[in-house]
Structures are given as structure tokens and as C-alpha cells.
Length: 151
Image (cartoon, rainbow, N blue to C red; front, side, top):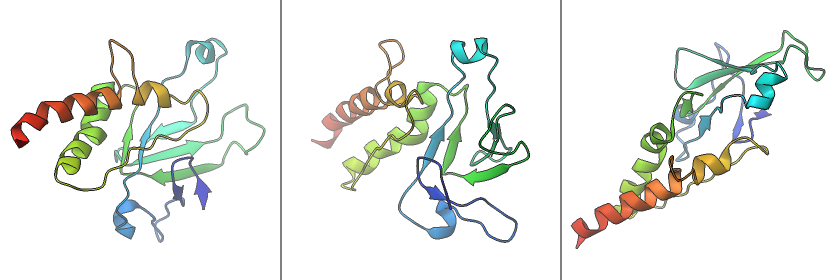
């Protein structure tokens, strides 16, 4: 198995498929791919993520100038949902955090966990900015919006 930094997953093949749906685990794993930073664009770096037609799948390919992997190496991974570079904070909230609020109010256990390498975008996704709030401010706003209806 290969580690994506979010969960242990195995490359998908026509004969063996590992996914949330296949294992029926009560765990959803989402992936958000951030755009390249200006410094990365200026350094003529490219992304190693290829998006598939299926919004759950991505392919990771070796960087063209990488020394760790051979250029022909590719691995395919499946997640509950993949958020693309163009997806905004509201898209991520609607696809992840909004259901957490409903589940929490219904008395279910909920956990939001962000994991990734340095500079991957965890803080931006979770906290956001004043103009683009992240998951925590949006979840709290939604929770406090729904609380009066519960009284």
C-alpha cells in the first residue's frame, strides 16, 4: 500500500479496487489539491496530479525532473471526493463540513482532521482568511444558525 498522507490506499487496478465504498468503513477521506504557488510557477514546476473524469479518482505521476521515481511511474488513488485546484472554500465546505453539522446535531460523532505536508494548504482550508473563511468558521456559523431551531 502507498500512503497519500491522508489514508492508506492502494493503487486501483481492474481486478483489485480499494476504496471507502468497497470497504464500507465509516471514514470519508477527501483530497484537496491546491494550485501551484507563484514561486512554483516562476520556477517552472508542474503538478504531478492528473484529474480523472470520476470526481473520486486522481493519478499521481512522477515529476518530469524528479529523481525519486521513473518518469513512467503512475499511481491511481480513490477518495470519497477530490476537490480540484479551482474549487473554492464554499465548495469544500459544502462537500465536507456541512454534513458534519447535520450529523453533529443528530447526535453522531464527528471529526474533521486535516493532514498533509508543510505548505499543502491545511491552514487555509481549515481556518481560511477574512474574505474566504475556511471550514471551522463556516461550520461554527452553520451550527449557531441551526441551534435556535432546536429549542
